[in-house]
Length: 127
Image 1 (tube, helix red, strand yellow):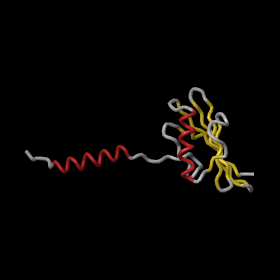
Image 2: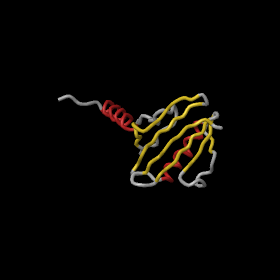
Image 3: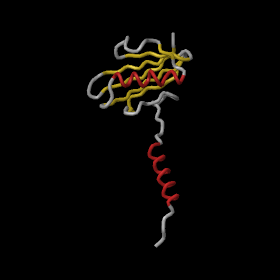
Image 4: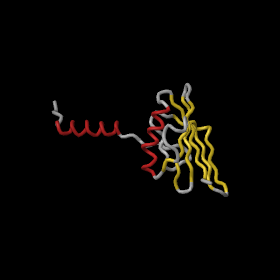
């Protein structure tokens, strides 16, 4: 009977652990760099994306039965500034709606509480 090298077992365990923990970053359809918050499931058939002479318009929807409005806005308030988005409204002052600006574009995120919670992402040109 052959003995299995303990170092081999350790390396195999580490490789398996890393593979399980590594998550592929998902982005909202139509957006190059708008992350889809873990726990949100995108509605693939309801999004709209097109270019106009004045800029682009993108609309996408996602839902969740596990996350609250507060969780969703907290995630995007933390994540979006790292991607260059600047808040246009303070968190909590606009009810179920947050607005961010970057490079002449406006990103609106709105949350409709219900079962499930619906999240709407809309990108338009500022102005």
